[in-house]
Length: 113
Image (cartoon, rainbow, N blue to C red; front, side):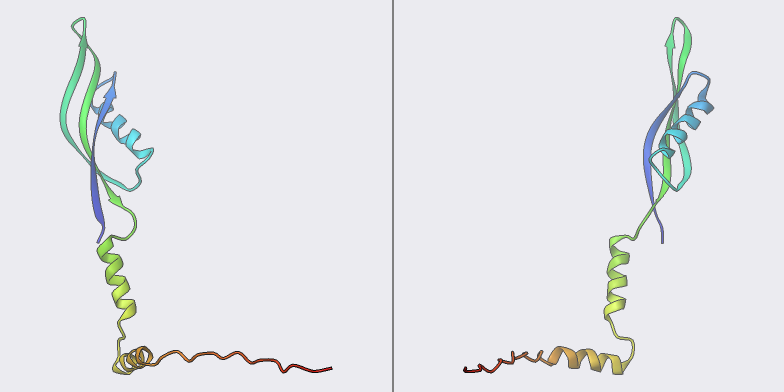
């Protein structure tokens, strides 16, 4: 199951509010992959001499997080470790009980001259 992450951004444009939203998405896409949606939280504008000079859009951008979550990794590890059939379970149990055999070094005979 994918995990969705949300980041809050502010897009800015001199042209209008829609362009400010598009700016936020464009800037986010430079570093974020798998963007799935945008939620416009609010609009603001910067005014100078009774004219709007910058339109601002406060947005939440949603994207899919890549990779496996910790719980998915744990489940995957468990399924790898757990034997499926009774015969496999017996083999795992048997391997755990058996102690590894010590390897003995073979000594070379000394030759007297």
